[in-house]
Length: 457
Ligand SMILES: [Zn+2]
Image (tube, rainbow, N blue to C red; front, side):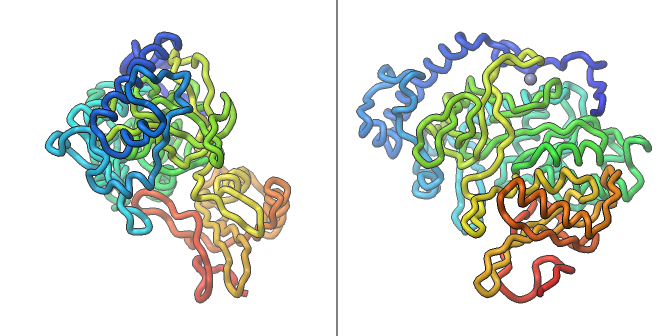
């Protein structure tokens, strides 16, 4: 583990200590009050959520409490699509100062509106996340999240300013320029997707910039795609930093919904004074207990422009209550272990890409970039894990390519109960991400293989 020297090893200061370390009972009272207020606002706004509340027999915020939260209606992605672009507003259209969202993979955009108050809240939440990572006034934040409709870049940008840090708004891509900026400006904090952190780490190493030669980075705040502990180890080794997870989605506010502290780095503190969190059984919608994996659902207690009641995210994680060594009392969520939509069904077996990643990256000879190919040629339904042997990995494995392939296939079969073929492809064959999120799964229904060097037989 890498020592970080922010504030000479002392526990970093919280951005909003009163809220972040509030006793749990006191916070519950605050959440309850805010929930009543939210329900009143939704009813006053009319529209879809007011209609659902009426159907559930709720005509006033005074009727609801944290205890009967599970009886309230939920919302989902479909509601945002149906309400596109401004159908879910709880404020006049003229109070919207910004929009964010996603362009939509299937061509269906998701649009989220922000009031001035929402933007301020968002900046504070991202400032909390950066402070939890050990940053403070004067820290330099190299922000390589994409800027635009996507919330990553702008969210961290505003948070860094709110914290009083110095933000370098480099956005994604143009990796050579990023290497120069890191060498020249000597940032402490790197913010981007974990897959881009790998790409950047490889580029920095190629340029001769490592911890040993004076790479300044101390900590990384990575999110916007699910990633495993094994990936964390890889990034830490590659960049000589502490990697921390940050979670958010535009529907709820963007990054800053939850983030890890550098002190414990074992789960993400959810800013539950603003985003009330539950885990639900993905099929039945019933709440799962503390420590049980389920679909994350958030109620945006204080958002103004587009507040959502029990928004079902599709992300699978578990919640854990308790006081952290950092002093925060905010509930922790585990890393997201998968997305409901990302689940692959291979010959009747359900498997999340992250489960495969965990097995693959535990083998140190394997490079951190990989691609899962679903071979659908001629009615097949096979899974091929395409890997490279590492050039920048911590190494230490004496395995030959052939024995590595055998060992990994055996471990995958044991862990997943599924046969996964492992193909070791030439270095550089697996597509790297230049902007934003990595593509980890590709379908192959015919023609050229999706990875050069993959045997088409
Ligand atoms: Zn903590």
